[in-house]
Length: 70
Image (cartoon, rainbow, N blue to C red; front, side, top):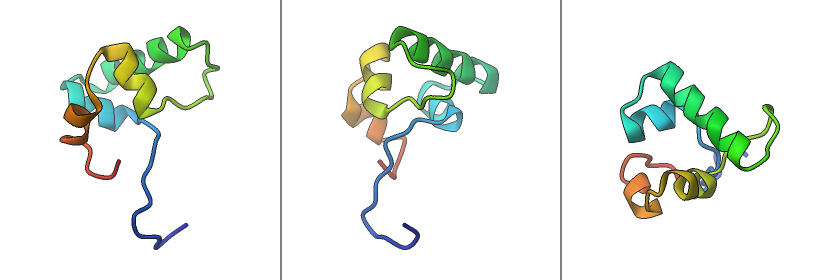
């Protein structure tokens, strides 16, 4: 997968949440935990950008302004 141009990621990280919302690390991790609970996901599961946008009510286009590789 390394070196593949145009490859986009779909998983939200705590760092992404920090950039988008301005929350600190713990608040970002807590938000991801709440999103996982809302979507009935296990704690090992990932949160997608679509799920993040649905849960927060943010538009994907607004989120893309903060995260360049999605």
